Amino acid sequence: MDFATIDKALAGTRFMTTGQAKVMYDFVLRKRLSRVLELGFAHGKSSCYLAAAVEEVDPKNGHVLTIDRTDAERRDPNIWELGRRTGMGDRITPVMAHTSFTWEMMKLIRDDPTPRFDLVYIDGGHTWDTTGFAFHLADRLLVPGGWVVFDDLDWTLGGSASMRDKPWVKRLSPEERDTGQVRLVFRLLAEGGGYEECHEVRTWGFARKPVSPSGSAPGAMRGLVRRTVPVGVRRSVLRAARGARARNGSH
Ligand SMILES: C[S@@+](CC[C@H](N)C(=O)[O-])C[C@H]1O[C@@H](n2cnc3c(N)ncnc32)[C@H](O)[C@@H]1O
Image (tube, rainbow, N blue to C red; front, side, top):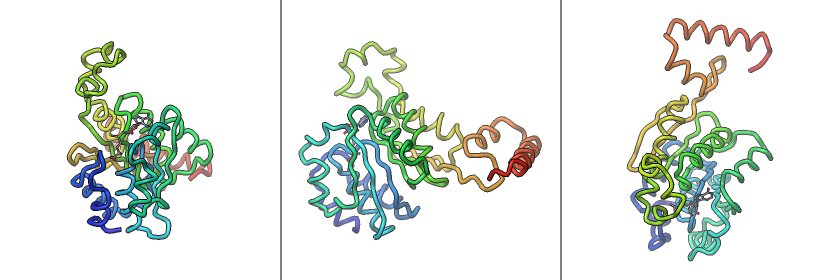
């Protein structure tokens, strides 16, 4: 579905703005991404934009699997209603988590460990623990060359009107309260762990899982080697690793 049509159908619903949606929609089309996992859908607005985009990329199979908590069902409108309104319902599979999307991601990995998503869009949680662990799990589910998009790089617990007065937030250290924890995950774990083409657009961080060419070290290890080992040594280490893999008959 073209952008103007989906944008019109979603007017007046909360969360993803037209400007943000246009960036995401164009990104999905430019990179030819068609299998999307979204973490945090709320009303399902971003899910519908993503569904419209994957439909353009792959009209037959383009799909969005999206996870939120069970109480998202009570939102007005909820994701099913928006799916009907936009005609995108068949392209979206909502998963309702009792506690957290990280538990549902465990089930995705347990039921089929094959990496199978081109894009994981993380728009919920926003803490070091939740986003950090979600990124770890997302890495397992992403195909090589797939993308992670982190929303709200600078969101803080202390700056959030809905969070700052909660007793557990008040007990945090000032550093924990006032640091953009999503940015820490983006910079320290994604970029620092060997993800490539890391860049920011608005409040989003984009990071690409390395495509491990045959014979090179896997993504995270390659990033570590690149940062810590001089080039000459690095080449001989990678050569030795290739030799060992060939001897062991692994790919
Ligand atoms: C900002 S809203 C999502 C907005 C939506 N992506 C959009 O742009 O239209 C964040 C959502 O994440 C969900 N969320 C936060 N932490 C979560 C967790 N650990 N597991 C499941 N859902 C979570 C919340 O329930 C909320 O609906």
